[in-house]
Image 1 (cartoon, rainbow, N blue to C red):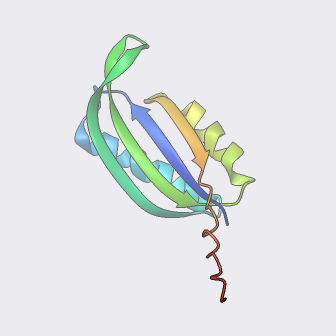
Image 2 (cartoon, rainbow, N blue to C red):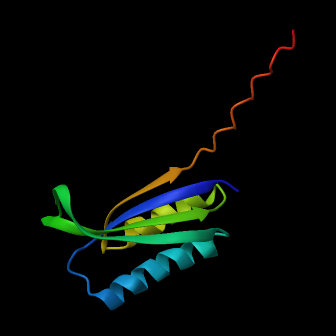
Image 3 (cartoon, rainbow, N blue to C red):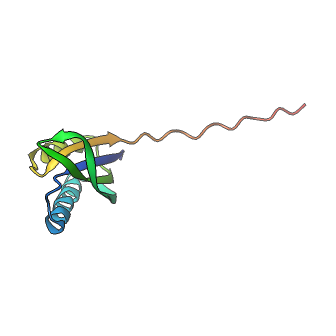
Amino acid sequence: MPSYELVLVVQPTMEEEPLNALVDKITQTISDLKGQVHQVDAWGKRRLAYSIMRYREGFYFLIQAEMPASAVRGLERSLKLMEDVLRYLVVRQVVEPAPAKAETAVQ
């Protein structure tokens, strides 16, 4: 299964308990779409480059997960419906092949 990174920006007015419930709901959505969450990093509250819906700050989260490519559209649909999520970005991680070792010439 391909690996993905999901970056979320959530409203800064949320309390800690509803914020954790929102992240749990998103990880449950990934699991329901036959995906597997590997890591959730809370980056904390940061200033936005520009205002979004009159907010100048937001809570940032990075979620690393594996899921089928067909599940990405369903995840994005769920994120669009969540009012507390200001922005999101789902990016597929590309695994680069290991560089080939140069053969030494024997002379």
